[in-house]
Length: 127
Image 1 (cartoon, rainbow, N blue to C red):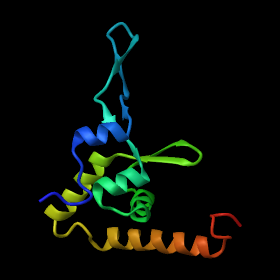
Image 2: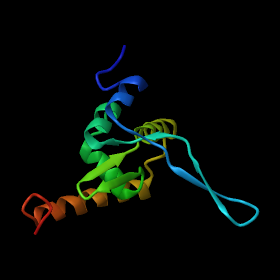
Image 3: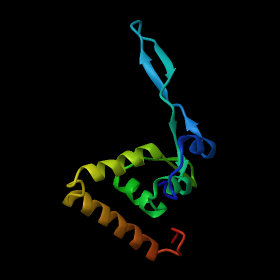
């Protein structure tokens, strides 16, 4: 049975842009050739949360700790890699000891620092 947050790759392609990174290849004569890399999909926090079932707050925390990547394309726009997050979820399911003491402490500390930072501000991340 399909869960509410699951979408097909075709549905995802309509909502979020695909990004093709450039790969630099050094040639024997010392010059550089630029080639297109493997296309990847990036999506904002709302779409990524909808697709993966991970809340927007937890996406941000996981990125702050360094467990997933985020890409800041403009001052107010953060993009995530949904396929990478799905791999992360599968890894945590496969490895029972994934959340060892170091990872757990880093995640909890990031959460505490973030909550503490918001308590000292006007609620929008500003002093």
